[in-house]
Image (tube, rainbow over all chains, first blue to last red; front, side, top):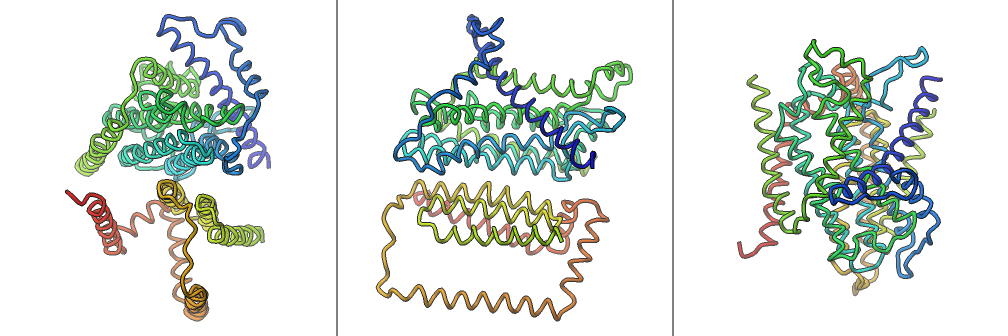
Amino acid sequence: MVDAIVIPLLKIVILLNAVLVAVSYLVLLERKVIAFVQSRLGPMRVGPHGILQPIADAVKLMTKEDITPARADRWVFTAAPIMVMVPALIVFAVIPFGPEVELFGRSVPLYITDINIGLLYIVSVASLGVYGIILGGWASNSKYPLLSSLRASAQLISYEVAVTMTLVSMILMAGTLSMVGIVESQRDASLWFIFAQPVAFAIFFIGGLAETNRAPFDMPEAEQELTGGFHTEYSGMRFALFFLAEYANMIVISSVATTLFLGGYLRPFPGVEGLAFLDLIPAWSWFVLKTFVFLYVFLWIRATLPRYRYDQLMRLGWKVLIPIAIGNVVVTGVAKVLL
Amino acid sequence: MAEAIVFYGLAALILGFAVLVISTRNTVHSALYLVVNFLLVAMLYVMLGAEFLAAIQVLVYAGGIVVLYLFVVMLVNLKRPPETHQDPRRQTRLGLALASALLAELAAIIVYSATGESAPAATAAAAAGADIAGGNVEQIGMLLYTNYLIPFEVASMLLLVAMIGAIVLAKREL
């Protein structure tokens, strides 16, 4: 009873809260990082060094007027932000934050569940997120959001192909679809897969930038040409859901990249005995640290690189990344058979 | 018992959303109901222990194909009401013919599975095999690349032909 219901429920509650807090503070981190890159201070007024800014933002967004455009499709307009947010959150069910640990005399795994199709579950749930974007733009019954949502979904579908192909080569490496199994196979190989699959990692990371609509691929939100993007007509908390879902997706991509390429919750150099003292640090903090490295790179790239043009984006996706990804799968397969 | 309740609940929802798909006049709403329908069918697969099939159902149908439907719906102007055919009862007659064909097929399946022992026994054996060999991903992979290799390859050829056909139609001046 306790093991089957109470502990999973507790884990879900804790994880959801942790993710949502991380998402709101990621917004602050982004503003701070970009400010430092541009020699500014960023938010400084609310709390010391602006540390309470996310709470002030949440209060502001919740008390704002919630407008539905007169000619909008009311039901779809209401459902679209939910359809963006839900897939971004339920993906966390299969992400392993740590191995099994002893807590109050019980052995508790630091993940909600480990299913034998974990990676496939992530890909399929993440592919549902595009509905919120495409329908949000359509239901607003407004020109620019519609254009933006068409752009966004074309971009998502194109880069999904390349990213999924890199996942195939990772499955070939690990021999399993279970997320915990992938981490453990890196322990067995005593090698982070980023060193075995640098090409797959590069394609996955570029594809991840494109799938989360982040700079330099933030075409759907090109303010200068689309007056904002697919969420132009949204206000208040509904706009905030789109906004938060983007950051939640960044965390998803970062934690999947950590699990697949950086050994998840394993310490650096998992095979070297001389570094065993690193195991004193709890495994989950390695996971959090590696994920934050990825998130920082996301912010860093946004502050550094200009936006791609739309045709350049499509050319990069279809004519460069997808062929390389397919070639990588073939090479990985051949190497796997020969070695 | 609980399994039966979940099954009939899911089946009722699936049928309900299927009716909504064809009865809604708004094309985008219709596509949305289709997505819900696909997700419910995926749940049915999970109930049967076919997690791989469920994930593929969500990934390919709900996450891929309906998105393309939505693209077409949004790019093509569908504001114009459908033109009525000269013969107003043509649709009724066609519908009746198709419905009776479907009924005959379903009846044939029920009669066949009630009399012929082979099919359910084979399914049960396959299910037992899946438990032994660990995970139905490996199981489906083995079957697709051994026993069902030719249908699998033919299906991929079919998709390739469709793809080339679409490119030829879209780019006439290649």
